[in-house]
Length: 466
Image (cartoon, rainbow, N blue to C red; front, side, top):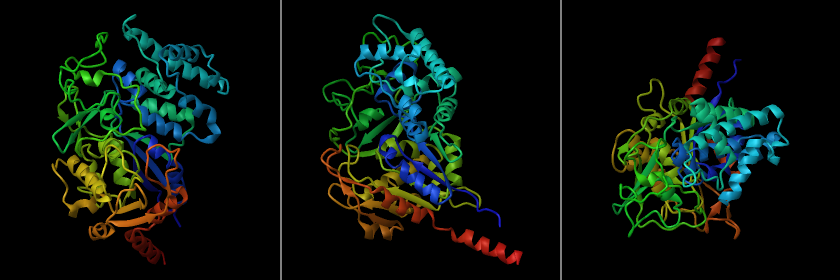
């Protein structure tokens, strides 16, 4: 008998939060003979990514790098440590430390094979050359403060090859990530920066992903300072602004956001209504996604919305043109879209989702998918199950409330799991954390279900052979 076709799973996620579930997803695909595609947005403009964007433009690569390094097998721990390393949090020592990576004297090179170390040094040297070309000392230089070596390598590889995809491929190859089993897909393939804005229910607009989720000090919601979406927002006096950004682009998008805290969530003045992409001049646009993302969704048996930031990790991928159609299976010949569309509900609330219930999370996902289809406004509840068929959730202090009766009436199956409370040492305050084994079993039970059409086909084939 011929082997069953390989089943496919697509996971929408951001970076750090979903990294904690990589082992869970690995177990699910191993036990169900699946391949896995992670879809990750490139709108991150915080941390060391913001300095790279300030100087070079280009995509926000922090979350891509974070997932690639998380997928590096334990047998390649030396390269994991290398790409995961951050330079000193002080600008001067950080710059000096980077020079040891250029000269090959950094201790992290010692365990690496010589050809691998030489290749990495070549990419970092190319990046350094590009930094020197753009520098205008003494007033304007690159800030290596807290820079991720993985981010620096990805940027150097992109600048050298002229291709973001080629840079991802090179990093995955050096890390021995098995891309035939698990691939990391940027939501948008581009050498240009893509920023997002969020509209609040009170009419306020917040510009930039970092300002939405983890604002630098002072907060990105300005009351007595100039509006960051206008040309009046002040730029550093030493910003040459020669070739990394188009003339007339929003000054706020050219500011660094190296230092911010994920441990403190200043409440938003109102709920987020929706997010959208903006061009360099602040005008709304609807970019096309990476074509591989659409293909992956169309071929998938299951789509999973992972834990993480609802509006800055999930929505930026969902609002891209055509994504909603692919998830819903609209306009696909002989296809109804992925059979299972699973939301793993966060175990706690954050700055973006204060006061949200499970209903609000599902409504936001449906609205984002409808927005990608050119439909404005809230999605009708009757359409929710087009984009979410299963909800996995926790119950406990700090976790979002779940109205199981309403959701079941909307055609959404709810699966409750028992987790554990945040310990006092955990960031994020009150909330619940998933038990990895229980979550893997729940996902496996859903993804492992056979499509009745497939079973009928197999029975018909068996009958014909007999």
